[in-house]
Length: 308
Image (cartoon, rainbow, N blue to C red; front, side, top):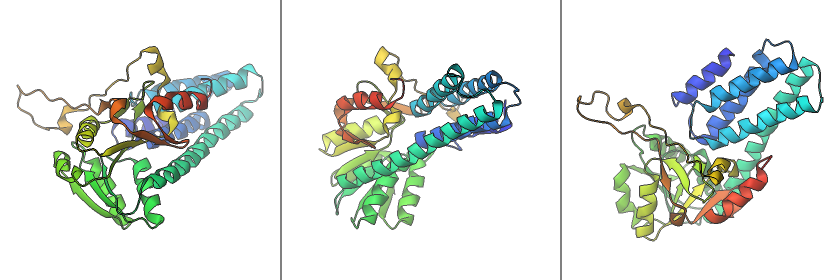
């Protein structure tokens, strides 16, 4: 296994690389490392190294369908390249796979640009926005609206136990946006005057349910109680096609020491990384294809995913 692939897997597992989109980008680059570092002398040998790398990378974070979707498409691509005898030489095969992965990265940049533009139209000057955790899609939407001259106020939940909300708050403050961070349940007081909640997404199911950082579901319930709109900013590649067949998205349990490093012996520590927000609490998904209702997202995503 390529050392660069192993290092990427380590960084994903340790949360040095976090956020569904950043994890997917790292996974795509790791495939390029696997191809470039492969010592195989045949096309099939290089393919075997790619397959091994995809299994290793996808296992680093179980709740990341965006990563899995791109990796599945990569396997489909290398298989079709061989089956179609489009290239027999190892150097040409390596080059074709690397080119394919770079096209994915380019597509991701185009998708997030469109998502930010659609999201910015959702926001109007004077709005108070509540965020949870850190999502580059969410901060991108807010900063795009800010660039368009819209005066916004943002309340960031700190998001225990890793405090990813601090990353969001710092990023938005640097951009010149009025930003406040609050303890997670302190957000209740701010919901009385909020206009919209914007969160990211780690996965979206076939029924439009959202899997995101733990605390998202509770925030969605509070938003409904206060008549505040709730939107998730997510590229359609975050849709998990396996959920169409009854497969449940795995909720990762993180290291208990993140919550309490030296907990007493008889105290059990639960540290779920994510929770599930039912579609009925979500006003819509902000995507690269526009602002979509939860019930419509699966159909649009399936049309975009290759091979679906």
